[in-house]
Length: 420
Image 1 (cartoon, rainbow, N blue to C red):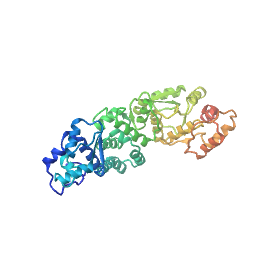
Image 2 (tube, rainbow, N blue to C red; image 1 turned 60 degrees about the horizontal axis):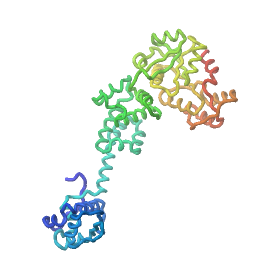
Image 3 (tube, rainbow, N blue to C red; image 1 turned 90 degrees about the vertical axis):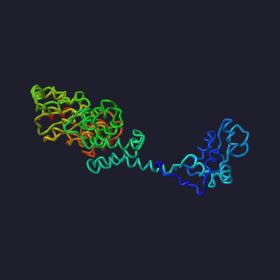
Image 4 (tube, rainbow, N blue to C red; image 1 turned 180 degrees about the vertical axis):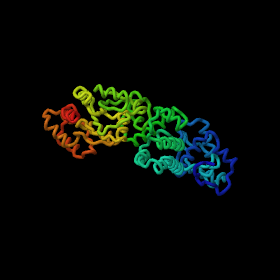
């Protein structure tokens, strides 16, 4: 039985199957029967001409036997369906006509409308694992699932509803375990979740969906490339490479190595591996955070061992930076952040704010206006505007004054704060 609803072309009168097979069942008339089935599937009328270009001699002869006359002398072969229908009815071969005859010869015809409706229903049902995930574990992923329904990604990756169901079931299974705390290697997580250490290898449909969902959980920004994927996975606690992701610190204590660098007044480079295995055992009351390495390097030169705890993002917050700042925040440190006064700086600050709370450090609209007034030759602002959730007036001020103020421009003020 067909898995689809069949067209109810059941003959009211018996069909003479032997005569029908001789008339219409010839291999040379398969093309004609196929045309009729396609019309039936589309609910189109079985009237009018159908044409076969470049027919063989056998196809012409079969059409002539069916019609009782030559169908024409042109290069193409044209047969009128209503003429065939009339022959079948008058001869008693198929009293209910051509549609009934084709159904007897080739089996029930699936209506395309029914096929499409069943397929669309199957695609809708394929998202059930994600709907259950939202209901029971991850309500914050509701918007992501809604986007996934509409952007066609799942259909491109899965191709069929059944494949999509299995793929989304595995996706939901992974996402309900994220973010991973403590961090774990990506292959180990894949092996523990799916029994296959390579299940989340780059390029697999499952890795594409799980990474997309993980980013929706953590707010990791859009991007591309191997380094971006490594950092995106790490933001959810899954480590592809625990050594490449680093963060710069100065004056931070809590491990033997940090104690040594803090006493020496030298910057420390902490890897994600160090931070996940041996995070600092102490958390200072306040930690200052900057965007650019020049701030930290100058603080080391100027303040040395007297510099209070300072962390440098070096641009977009890395997995190592996020791991460190989350750890410090969770253990009571207040984070105070400063970045460039430009659209890129606002985006970096917003990306950090989505992952860990911080307070502005000379990083408000008032601070920007003060810096602009003191910098008459500041370069013009360019790029796409961005918002500043910690101070809505800041974005408006940047648009109004139209210049960019880099951290190095206000370095003296930042060092003065650190030196108090």
